[in-house]
Image (tube, rainbow, N blue to C red; front, side):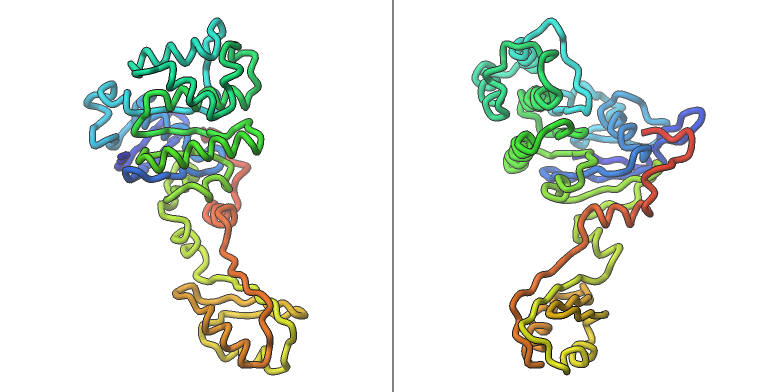
Length: 314
């Protein structure tokens, strides 16, 4: 759906994007992450044809943007972090205007349906300038979905939304995914990316650090998983027995709570449970804890999310 090879954008004072190669598959939700100054916005602007790359190759739907970007524009929906509206139009007029541009059939029903979904239908005759920031973000999402695009490009799509609004937009994203839409999301709200993304790319200082699914990212930074076990009693032999299990990297017993770090190459929970039970302990609960996307992200970016050198751009 999206393919770049050695995509580069250089300004007089800085190389904002450095030889980035991305591959976004059809029908997937693709999370595009990076701290401020990583080059995400510059990359997205090139993907949308807003700025020209200095070098490298770029294609959407298998079509090079250098050939004919306007031929594929109708298949793309965009939600920007700071959407623009026409002050003289009501929300309905704004959506109707865009529906006409994209030649949306049955536009009234389509507008009503989407406005109802995000809780804006009763505010359709109000100008967006009178909306809250969260309401404007929802309206921008409705505009992006009007023509049922095959590709959604989302830049901070839940910016300014309260928890209820975030859930509404998350529901729309999930519906679009089920319908086969490819969704490219750039966001600083990592918990939302963790919930929805099939694969994730992380950029830092203009470079692509990694592109993988979440489990792959986790394994790249830590080849172990943590299992927390609660027991009713702790036999004297338990620590010695755990030490002899080859798949256990280390363990710590604190009262009735045991924290165990296991080799992540396979699922050893059944073997672990049997060993604990055989020692005479009674297991009350067992929970596997994997690194969160936030923890993984911080590891990849080396905790360096502030203090970027002068001249680096977002």
